[in-house]
Length: 437
Ligand code: F0G
Image (cartoon, rainbow, N blue to C red; front, side):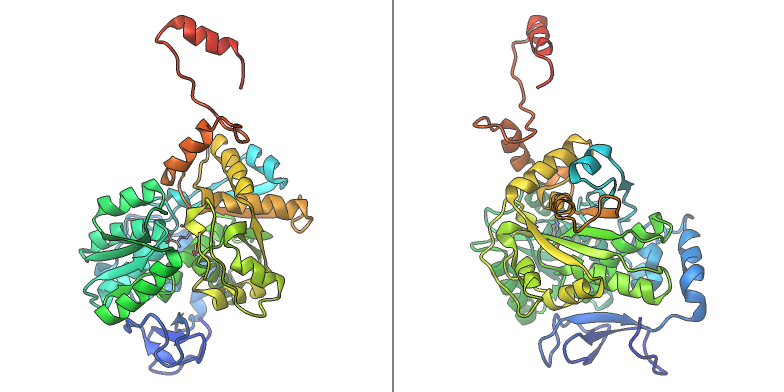
């Protein structure tokens, strides 16, 4: 949105965040050809009638029959991909996710005004669909012959679905034996060529980067700047749901750091466009066993960190995040914090979110566990307005859920064991007589 309005400039272009080299919007490069830096999408600066109140009124008016307005991504198209032609857009539609308030979760987290933005309510069950609709649209615009990603499972499910909608061949690289059941099942069912790589996510990512470059396949990981443009709408939609009165904090799980980068860019632009008068603070939450970004934060981001990742939250089991620099910039911009939570804390938060009737996948519960930890430490005040983003659906990881609730020795906190009975009324009566578990 900032970044120079030269006459004759296209509406959208790409800019290297490292050396500021500019590339056309149609370049398929996954990094800067000069310095290897990450690319960012820039749009021409808004005209006076595309700012502040005029812009919020434009968004609010989009409730009609237009298929683009039905999407919680394309409803904000001026800030996403202003020159996309209707027939190019690959949309389900996605977005339009609820902002929930549940007393049991607020009480557990120790923050009265806690809201949950449930991105698991997207068409393939995670926030990835918001980036994928834009990434796949861009793939179509540049006439990519095939698309690819490395994934811990959600990106692959989303890419597989949107590639099928677009009629493009899809290739996904996932760590063998480390992807949650629901995600692998979706990826296969939607029809992507699925490679189970003997290695972790970081190995998959290195391999797909090389393959994309050498085999002329369009890379749709979150290093792709068009994905970031779509993911910005999590923040835009949340702000709109709050009548553009920003919360004090936005908490989100952090893995490869694409989403943290997208949130930073969305907040920067919302502030520049006069949509918000105040900057919310980002709280980025990592799993303790996959916490390079939290380690970096403790040292003021003096240098990048890398770890061998290990956590039950397989979505964020990432040791060498790709979008480190722009995520660090997002934390600095918002005076944010980065912290980590143990697998036990994640599982307990998940059990609370699930039992409140909301449900989410393990990595998503990291945001609630993180809010609880930051509130206990006094970083987040009990009266603060906080939005925790739930990034994925409860059915993504049914294997872990069943293990959790059936574990007997000892039963984990809030486990709800199934009870096998004879097919008799007496057996039912006996169970009812036991009272609550
Ligand atoms: N939550 C969920 C449910 C995820 O699937 C991911 C990332 C994140 C949080 C973290 O977001 O990577 O942008 O920091 N999943 C990727 C994937 C890596 O392949 O599905 P991030």
